[in-house]
Image (cartoon, rainbow, N blue to C red; front, top):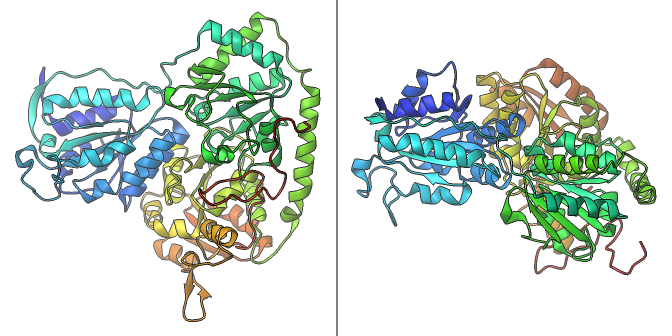
Length: 596
């Protein structure tokens, strides 16, 4: 037992848990902890962005690239409230973030001091944050800190990772007590659960008996770092792989077995394979509405006619949307290794299987490529969206990292991006919060300083978090932002065009009585902040400017004027009940009994 100050305990915990960054903003409530962090600044670096939402997204992006948690630090009240959206994105996309929030001092509980929430309970901020974290811990004495921090670390990185919250009355940062220290946890991916021998044997039987199998992977495969095992299994059994955006790159998408994304903005061959499959092995994927065409039969999947094996480390996802024929609670890498070992035991060799199925899929892919290729070949001003995707792929090296925001640009990248490596395509997928892309790029670059990082973000989304420019300059973080400038909330305007007879209202950016398109001069805005700024209006110029911006290794912004009237060609569907969904632009639903 040693007598320690609460702030020192927290600072030493961060060192012990090997948390290298705190993304945080000062306030009266956390100055005591900032003083303790000063003593460990060589081991835990404080990076202070200009908004707490960006702090959460930076920690999220850092984890997605490095698979090492970072911390956030906010003061009492509004600063902590600004975290909520960023933590919601992290929670729904399974990112471990250690969120430290300050609260009012215990001696003032329930007296309504500055920035206390007390309508239903004293110092009640942790009830605000609970829905967006795995758990919120609120120690009220210094003696409670070591156990709360160890349990928070364990919760954050066990099973399905996610953000946690340590809500600390700010007197604890200064007060001292005799405490018993807890051991370090540092547990992400160090404790894995596997499947039973019987389930592995049954799953292997079904995989070998299937005539039209597919593997559907999600973020669970990325988080488990199971890319090698996935590729080994797919290639050994010649099974095509469909990926959610957060699983993209686990198999190099140039691999002929990689079919891309599925759903409304999926590739045609992925939707065709999904709806014609006789067996789906889903690993670390949750069948959300966008990857399942809103669960309408025949558009992306055909359960229960198609047999389903659903493997996930989170029991709540197994059977949430499709009751599986076999549900397996297991870590993705552990499960895939078990199946590979079972194939070894049975002496099942590689290749030479499913030629007819793969040939059929190749035919669908050829049809799709013929349909979409003209858009990739055209030069125009404003620029066709396909050209942006293609030139980003041409310029960015295989180990480059791309972060994407919420908006129409994301639909294009879901459909046509070819990710080459795991942990290299960062999406705000589950909660789809704007501002994630421009902000998470900063954390991603800190996680991988030797790899180029580009953020593709909409004009609307970037305008929500323009202060990222200041942080990039202040901390010399050489990120390249590509602002997809179509002078609109384009994804929502497209819904108005599709469902409301083109009655656009509140979705385009206009000025003046003549409704002239309006946006700020993003390149000038960047230069004002000390960031290199470029404006590109011709498709012939974009690749060269991007190459120049990456090579300069400085923070840079490219304002790209994109044609707002060209929309991703839907191959699945997405329902906004009670509106009747639009049918696919290319292809269509398949029903059991139709010719395969």
